[in-house]
Length: 199
Image (cartoon, rainbow, N blue to C red; front, side, top):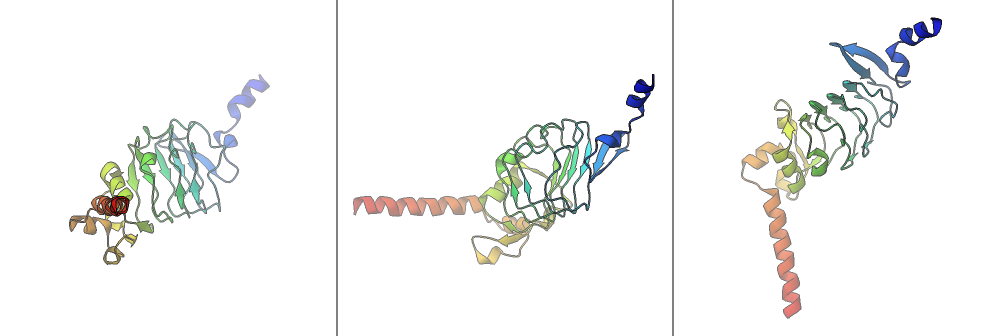
């Protein structure tokens, strides 16, 4: 009987990552790891977590399968970190169930389109040093961006100096197509190569 009581009386927080706090929000499991000086995503997050807050840390990368076993996950907050790299399979296993993914205020210059292919979540990407090019334009076409923050996606670098410092939406609204620019560049390079063959 004492053993049975021990099993029932262990709080949910006992399976929590040591630097985090585990609680319930609206009847769902939440893991709160905000402002804990984390340099990587904890590997011992409880599998039934629904809300995961990892904001205001020093995380630099989202590796492949970072959340693979967290099948109940609906919201991830990774804002205000130092994220520079997102692997192609970063959200494998949770992409379909996610509702919100906050990657704002990091150091992200580009993000692989493959990482977002199956993602149904509303994305927050504002306040990153984006390199405005075809890949980012394709992300905008295919991703569900949060409308409140999409205007804060600004070109930190770009193929042409005139786009630097401007909101990406403003550049695209002006008729710029980074993908066609890349295609024209490839066509010119191919033409030069072919010209060399026949010279």
